[in-house]
Image (tube, rainbow, N blue to C red):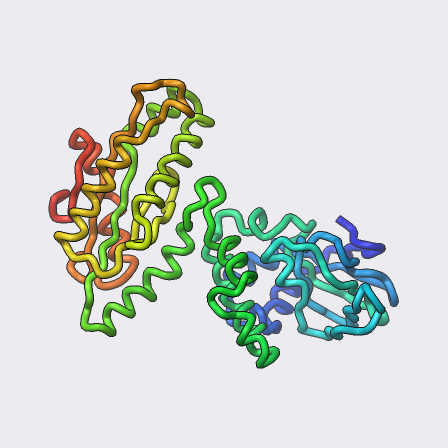
Length: 339
């Protein structure tokens, strides 16, 4: 897709894109595999002197890295220069991550060659489909770069600032259910466990759950009804967990709850309460069947008893709902119960 007179440079080697990404402050800490993936999703664009890269009000569908030349960003109100970007600089990250419209105009100062990510302006979610952990890495790197650009940025990157909340929603929000996603769990569970280790191994419980009859609902009433039922389930789970823990859509129809501070007895009581509440959920609206309910199987893994790190804890808990279903369903298992 061409942008305001820009034309794609004649099929540059992917390695050139990868090398440019590696030299930028935004992506310098990324692995070769990550850089290669990003390079494949990028494209080079060339601009003549004075040509527009983007106008104020245009969609923030990509970020740019300057390969050569320079780009001036100016105010749409009075044309005053707001910033100049040269080789290795990146710009347009905030709009890409928040899907906001551009609030300034960018034009080439002399001839300029830019690397645009993602190619074709597909948007971050589509470009990184299947790689949620990479989206989380980009968010973290962007926050670090912004905080390094100016001391005033420390106020911008506070946990509760509106645009940080929006960035987190984009990166960590599950599109279907509105719960936090697998990337959130993979990014934050290790941090939570590190905090527990620093406080003399205070407990933490990871509860995984799946509806025993989700496949039957899909097969009988269709995938739209299945998705709508899953959305209802996720909403009820989020309300049930409240401030005690964090509800996550781990993958597919498998949901999870992180319960900091809960040991065996407290985690089991919480799991029983969740099972009772979710099993009573009325699925008549999405399926048309007034008697239909979910059968819920849950698994509980405890830190540090069942895993000393996040990977071990997830591995210990994620297979338990399936093991419970194989035994007839509507069960709550600890790892030792599945042996």
